[in-house]
Image 1 (cartoon, rainbow, N blue to C red):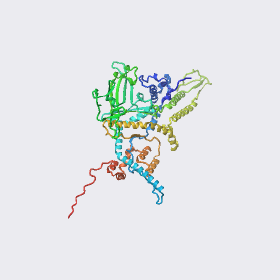
Image 2 (cartoon, rainbow, N blue to C red):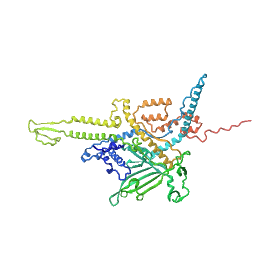
Image 3 (cartoon, rainbow, N blue to C red):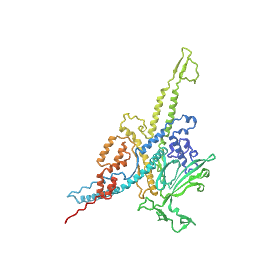
Image 4 (cartoon, helix red, strand yellow):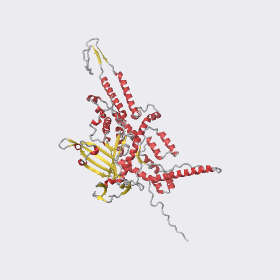
Length: 624
């Protein structure tokens, strides 16, 4: 009995694969990996990639086994169905407050009933206390509503800007690509690249090149340094090739570290030439901040408000290339700087965050790394592939029937071909065809059981992969119940992505501000609004929406989203709400009356007030 202790990780379900038995010996694992867990992680990504590419046969030992192996795309189908469930139909970027229906005013609680004329002093005290609480609640609710009305035009503008960026930079396709990587491999990495005077570009990089520096206290903390690195091959002009390593590095550092130096063991300020100085070198948006350790340099960024403290950190970016022959023993973070060909070295990005977003497929506060949606069904996928091989072999065998002949001279292995005459040579001769097809229904039934087990373990209803006839008579309620496990799975996967998507959108907006493409100001609370993946009844949805709107218990935004989820031809829910609002002049009048501002009403309708709202009155001559 082995005394080896199994280390449980997100990749433990793959531990029966040869690539993960000794991952440090795998050819797909670079020798410069910085952490002990990297070989297992990178080998797991490689193994899962083979399954998704219909090339898992590469993991089999013999050539004959690889030739007989059957793969029909089940892993990729599972991944794609999960991705469609996570994002849903008609998902979009929205900014908090941009789509709220504020036309009906705030929802205020009813005031307390006044006490009777003969009420006791105790009843009067209770009434006064309830009245004071009601007035405080009304004042708070009214203030919040007024703030929403005032801030809605800016929120709508930010939403339009974000959506234009997504369209122009094809960010929606990048998000789909990242979600596919998350579901299939367990992790994705999105990088935002600053552009001078413009919004950033977004790219998705393979997670096997992502190496963050994480603290031991909490693996979910944002790292202070991130490296992305990979090997690449360069063909030499005279023949042959050489391996290089490219490394991108982002690092958060105190701004003061770039303005100080150590002279004779003392930390001193330096000037623009690096010479000691009595005063620090400050930029236009920088100031000195007093701390417990003395004065340090702080910087105001475009997203800071008057009440914010200046940031004490900035992000430095480096990009370098090394020859593999120059880093035979060094690890990734210890590459010698003097042997690199630098594209950028410690470039100040003028931001106080690292524009790299790692998204795990599953919640991963303890492990950092997510788990692939294929991990727990991988052995079922193997069994399905092996069974498909058996079915194909049986089918091939039955297509060449076994014949028992008597009265003829024939050796074992002789073949009977169509159109050939066989003579028995005697009156007692004959021929029988052995019927071996009785086992085929059992093979097919076993295949169905394996497929059912696969989708059951994946938490995916058969309807989602087309294994149930639409005319089978199954009720809508029964289908909804079958979708319940998948809905729970989708809810968990969305939970892992929601904060990461919000972070990516905030980073993008702030990079646009830093580049001067967006005016300075607080960053909007933007998020991805996921669509519905559940089947619905259109007529029931329309009736429900109409009743809820009439009872004023549902906003216009929510109502339109429900219609979109039911399959109505609405291209964009928020744009549809804007069109509805522009036609609602009564709501605009209510806003003007409540706020005393015609401009607020005009913003609600999406129109501009004329320079002269009223025609001048004609002069009237008055006779004495």
